[in-house]
Amino acid sequence: MKPLPLLPRLWARTEVDPATGCYRWTGGTQSGKGGDDYGVISYQGRTRPVHVAAYEELTGRPVPDGHQVDHVAERGCRFRDCWNVAHLEAVPPRVNVLRGTSPAALNAQKTHCPQGHEYIPENTRVADGSRVCRTCDRERAAKLYRAKREAAGKTVGPPMAERTHCANGHAYTPENTQMDRGKRRCRICNNEKSRRSHQRRREALRTTTN
Image (cartoon, rainbow, N blue to C red; front, side, top):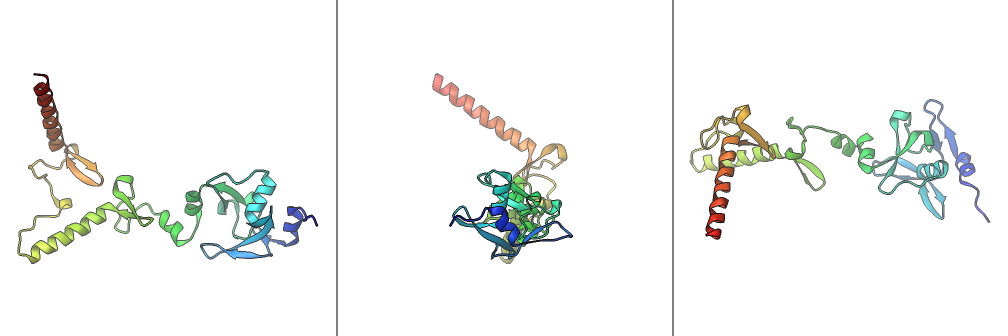
């Protein structure tokens, strides 16, 4: 027996929420990662999420590779069992996460670590799928290092973040400071290091040509 077209099957198990305009599925559901229930339906020979099946059927195009069908809150969607195509959009997974309200989504939306350091590329590393602040890493390592030296009765200098001069005595002024992976670098020392490196290469070149 040939199955009914998708749209009549959807409407047969749908209630329209008057406040939001959401087409709420009353048939079978399955729990998503965030604990929300998504409607499911047999479509094209397999069980599919209702909102995905509706999106593909009513837009006439498949979900692009590497994309997910998002329930867009800005369009008035409030329910994960909604299949109103006007509320749906195919987006990359990260966009979908950033739009959400789950703990993972809220964490991904953060621009600074708990200590107030900005999550910029040079100050961020990824461990086990989570962002880690490099500045906090260094401060923890420095604190541990200082504690060990103090326990051994050794002299301990000021923390790097509190130092006003580099190891060679050059002041950390704005003009003489550059950041590298969240660390301060002395421009004078860097320039001198580059000059010596160029000089060694020139001397090596003269040696090989003589």
